[in-house]
Length: 486
Ligand code: NAD
Image (cartoon, rainbow, N blue to C red; front, side, top):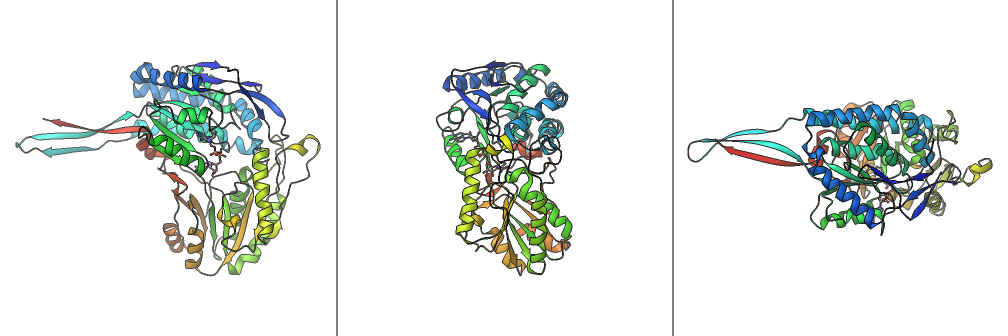
């Protein structure tokens, strides 16, 4: 059953406030709940609870016990899988078929993956001769960084939140989470699960609200928050980076992208089409790793554009419950307006609209939802705004290229550097191109294939730092060298 009042979760208790904001479903834009907005007092209480928990049972708990609790957490999320699924689909409107494969299972798996990492990570050891003819030994010891402020986006709410909360808790930290104002439900539901499995109070806290002059700003400027991890737009990341500089607190920033796919004529054509369709339109194009620029080698350009058009036009736009739904709505009216404004810019810039470019005709109450058509353009010059700026919608521009050097130059000519997908059967070329792409993740003959033990993050304005596997430990622990003179 969906809650119609979504509360903050502070020190193990659900907390209302006297300020509420609306929770809407993007399916019809109808109000489906009210969210209690945290003010300064609630953020203070959450941070104080998190600080106290560090000194309490959580801070004193053995690693083995902590891991046991995190494993119990995974089991309990899976027990309540359908509730998480319903909550995530209500907030985002995304197809159940997608959320039941990606959002919820991977949202749970993040706790298991990082519990395994912390259990198995080795340290370093050095034996040294001392000037007096004796010996000293050095070894590394990892301590938690403390209270971690976790600021989340709306596109994969549970998954991207636990991607940070999982390693933070595995490493012994406590957290205060600020979910996106668009998607507060699964973060709140996770509070119930934390209580059920016996995670001590104050370890996991949730404060709801917005960015400026609301919970987001109060949390990131709070002097007792020891580190801040963020996923969201680059502009917001810059503000958070400035806030974190006060008190010299570490930040991990996972930010925007304008990812290029590079398709060579020798690729497995069907695989390239399938992967590129997914990377452009999955989650209604609201995936940071998604492709908005596609470069195709000239001999297969026309055939590729035709196949992409056919694939886009086959996508069924619809409600989460319908198993045939291939694409849901955008997250909000505000975001729909932003994406539609880029559809208009594309026209003004002289794009050829291969397919889409507008709002689909939806029946009944769905008319008021945040729908847009999957959209493909060709014919724009490389300096067009539609090619340079992140749109974060179900759209891509496809351009032909003639040489490897030319495509590398174009694909890298962007302020962002998150991900790329390269399609070719020539392994040497794939390797050469992948190494020269200015990105954090380069896929060859695939897209969104993620081994959670590997480094994840962005180059250039797509991010600062890497998370995933042992790389997360670099952020969520303080690495100490202990030197013992024997
Ligand atoms: P956003 O930057 O608008 O919001 C993200 C979060 O920051 C929200 O919780 C918001 O309330 C909060 N926030 C906003 N202003 C703030 C402030 N001044 N102080 C503190 N908190 C503030 O991003 P979004 O629209 O939710 O998400 C979409 C963006 O996220 C896209 O740019 C996308 O590329 C990016 N993204 C990146 C990754 C990645 O791994 N690199 C993953 C997913 C999404």
